[in-house]
Image 1 (cartoon, rainbow, N blue to C red):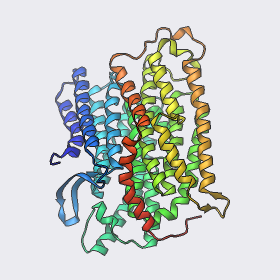
Image 2: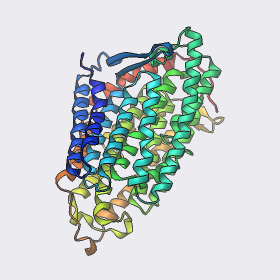
Image 3: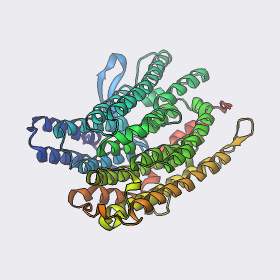
Image 4: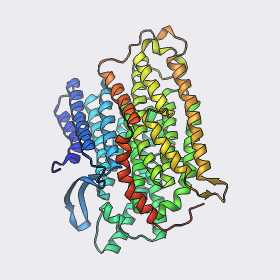
Length: 509
């Protein structure tokens, strides 16, 4: 295919924000329509690329290469494989629905949509980049606008949450940058020429000590964004303070950048380092799963429930990465997609309720299904996806992760733990999740009706766009998982082959 479809997907939001710059600030509806059209173009192109992707052939597709700084081996090089293509589609879906979830935005509308489109441009860039320099450049473009979007348009200690988020993520970026520079210098010495091409860097034979060191840097750098415990403290505050569309992007997409970077850069370039640190990731991710779920269970704010739930569910992704086999890695990528859609749906619905009720306190609600049946139905479907109901996207992803981790035979901590025990503990997180999700649904939407909320209007008009699109996506890939899993497997297979070819070494435990 000669048309640069990936570049077009990324540049559509850029064109949108440039047009918004030319629109007078008072023309709020025109600004919103422009943002919607720009993101719709990205969505249509992402769906087209997804359909045209040949998972039977696998490998990198829709390639485009432009020399940029040849003396340092920096090229604008883009392409997607079976692992990154679903992430591009996820980003396109979330930003498109996020624009409609922000249709009620009235404060500095022009600047809000400019920064929102700038953020998503960075996200697209990360997922399509095949050059490590541009990968990191787009990573920073995706992170930095979050400070302004939360600090200006947020709520609930927004300045504190914005600064906390930014400091955590920039410290993580610094660790990743050190790892990238070290990798570049090592590869240049081995190859005799400079390059940032990820495929070329992956072919370099790094010694074991270097792999252990750099993978640890990548684990911290990208792990902050996942987030991995105990580097997660910025995330719930960021979720709660962010405006609706930013919460959707934050949980739905930005957290996936960390997991994607850990696989794409960490595991792909340093498989022996990944094997060494995998036991540590496996132990910490169980803390994510169980601790996050238990903290979510006692929250009184709807957004805090979803924020800590995200910490818990991203623990499943980390478990899939730690197990380092075909089933678990397929499940990890599928879980990234499923969790992104689910949390985007949750935050869109909570934002709808908050905009009309001006509170997110669970105890104040009751029987909202009478006034808001569409919102209640959407929240229930999201809740059922969260607890892994068969027929919805999350079930397939979590099942693959549990199967992959359970079938890995390795003792940890001197035989006190094994991947099978960790898998059982992770499965217990589903029970905790079911407890708090069903309790929140009952107390908020199906509890005793409170007449003080009789004035609330149900979702209607453009407010239905996020609900319909996100629910349909959860159901589509839940009922037809082969639409996604076959594609993901085509991208994971070469990675697993590289992991299996790496020499067997003892893990950190």
